[in-house]
Length: 219
Image (tube, helix red, strand yellow):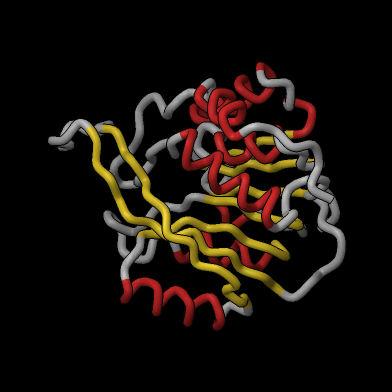
């Protein structure tokens, strides 16, 4: 079941109301996903594959919560956003209540390694590993450990695609789709010289051996 159809433009406007990170860290690669890209990812997950409506959804490294809140707006049964930055989570919580989904979203300040439970779907935008090589791998590993289906955004490139496919298979996942996308990043760091920078990215859809109906509560 896919739930009620909504316009992409409506979702973009809603996600634009979710604030950007107030003081992003370059080391942690804390950039806020653009509202239009978040909407595209969520529309694919919700309406092409039916992986959002009525599901339990996990967002690891959620930041201010655009993907997590968007999943709730598209009918997710319950959503958990996890981040180590409490400032970002406070903004996410406030935005969720303003947008009417505060009762279906939960926010946890923790390292992703501490998360337990079973979830239907992960939708995540992990660090690309530009500052710390391999920074995206723990996010992939944890999402595959906990979820039946994973949507994860990663930097594009032939070499990276080959590595990630093999890595995901070793973790027990199966890549069903690799969808090229464009990520437009505004200047948010002192060393950024351009007003905007376009980055080629890939959205990976990954299926994991079914574990039954997901829940944020049942560990």
